[in-house]
Image (cartoon, rainbow, N blue to C red; front, side):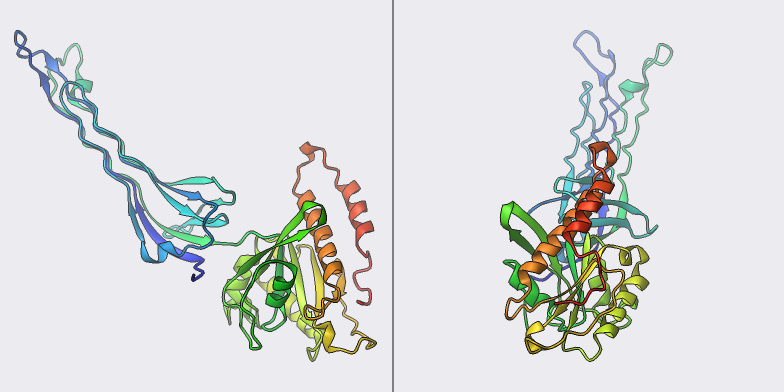
Length: 360
């Protein structure tokens, strides 16, 4: 299945039904008065987050959506039927934007979140509505209103706890396959990952968190070079970033600095998010070889591991869980009794407070 994360669709709310102009006629009362009913309302268009979707692929082929029109009013004060609403199902994490104005109409983050994107037109009033003491035989009636119309930009931004950040061939897909049940495509050439992958990491004590493996970035990624924008779009929602720096890189410090630069240029707020540095491919160096010292003062910790040999994997999972837990707790409001100072002390005790320490 192809992964589609940005589409443009056009939606129309249904037109309201026209009101009726009618007069009651009975055997002994040929002109009993106006009895034209109102027209029914047009159907509205909603966008709703559904749990069984992971891509916007369906909207690549079905780009126009129209709700039904309301039914005309009838005599005997019969109101026309209201047309049913239609719902566009999307994956959680979808941002809905008006193409013309650029306004973000809403974000559907949780399953069941729903957003009205095109209202249905109101049904017109029948002539019975216009009768008064001085105007007892009105013939006027109203036309139904037109429904709303919009061109929408639907953008999917994956929701994950940890986003893996790295250059092509940094070992992101391999790491994801080792720590979770996900099976992303893995190859010995750059840009093996062409679309985001999600994996759920299960740990003891029913502890779980979600990791996103996204396309690698190169210099200029924030400007759209390579697959950079596809990467950056999908790490916006992650709670924690893990910068992957391979130990066989010619200059690991420059790799880390370049990754930080691209993220900062794309979003300074994203760059401030809590992160760790993962030095990958530990197995390529002799066991007794001294690891390069990486200067990462803003990182929570620098850790070395190998997906091939499994060295450092459990330590990495425990570290990620600790950092993710801290991020989750920070999202809890003070009204829930959360004391950030207390948790901060527990967090500092759980991880090495010296982020520039020598990995190993």
